[in-house]
Length: 259
Image 1: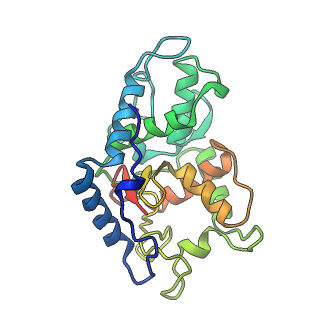
Image 2 (image 1 turned 90 degrees about the vertical axis):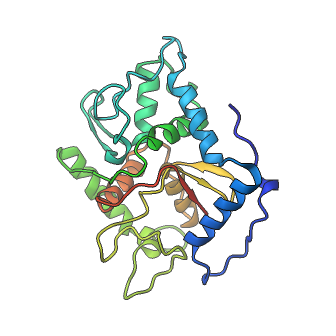
């Protein structure tokens, strides 16, 4: 299924001021899109991912139904809200994207260079959608998970790049104020419930793109004026583990619909 282009359908107010609550604006754009097209792009992406998940593909002519996302082969409900986590079969800490990639290699026989990023994203939308409404439950049980958490914490607070800023500059509230423009983008806040991990993967109506948290993190590095880490790299996964751990207990809204 091909995802439709929606750019001509959305009379978006690109010049949003900081006074506009982005959550309310997202709701407005969502309703507008439903009235105009009758369906959300995220719903189409989920269906595309479902087709890819169950299709027999690759050199082994197999589906991804046997993929273990941490709760057993083929168990999807509640799996994505427990990621990233350590997997014994790879001896690695993996997030949703990298686990999908692992299963495409192990179960379907694809070579790493043959795996299309767009397909990983679509499958991530489908898998994540099965955990919609469930609370984030990320644990630090294994030494490697604790090590990734510590790495993620260091990366989150580190200032780098041409602008000498970091993740915390925009995603942590200090003394009731912060530089970021999105009030729901805090990762560390007073309540201890970070919202940044509860809406990804998401459809971004501002640029008509489907992103996972890996895409979001890499884009943030670009905003920092810093070279973006590679997809599926330890740095990207470590940042997710740190943020997800601080989102524990928060209800997931998957897939998200964001600016």
